[in-house]
Image (cartoon, rainbow over all chains, first blue to last red; front, side, top):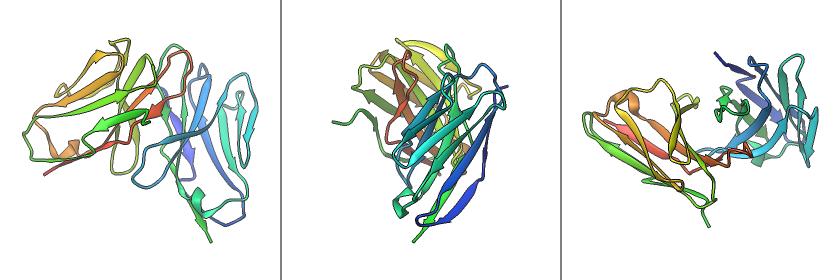
Length: 112
Length: 112
């Protein structure tokens, strides 16, 4: 069935450095890829998303890239800050299915 | 005001009991979801309703029964609770044409 692999499972970076989280999906019909940030004890919150007709999208310090041929997409956070510390989830979905397949999450720690 | 709300926030109960969790959204969305997040933080879809019609019904024990009285509400009833049901249950909603899903604050269920 559909599957989304996410790496790494944990990531520690120094404040000010960049962080990259990678996901690979299995369903070539997937066409929407959101990223969620979940702080401890809180709800997952959508931080950025990308559709299959776009290769890259940027929002301030956050960017997402998509390689449809290789079926992978990545989250890039630049100039990391302590408040970026959280668990990040990628997901993939296909139009008409309504269903998100989530990756297993990446725990990001930004060290001050 | 709060877009997706859930009650209760915490639920502690004994094995064998029956309990319900309620979800409401005021975003005008037509699709609502229940997710289960286990102790390892894995997020897994359980059910989805579109305009009060069940459209996703994953492999979930039939002790779990969702009900959607209208587009703005989705409830989850769990019969004969088991230790393995302990998790955080998130409700989410979306407009089917827009893909983005918005999560409620979660209900932490602890079965003792």
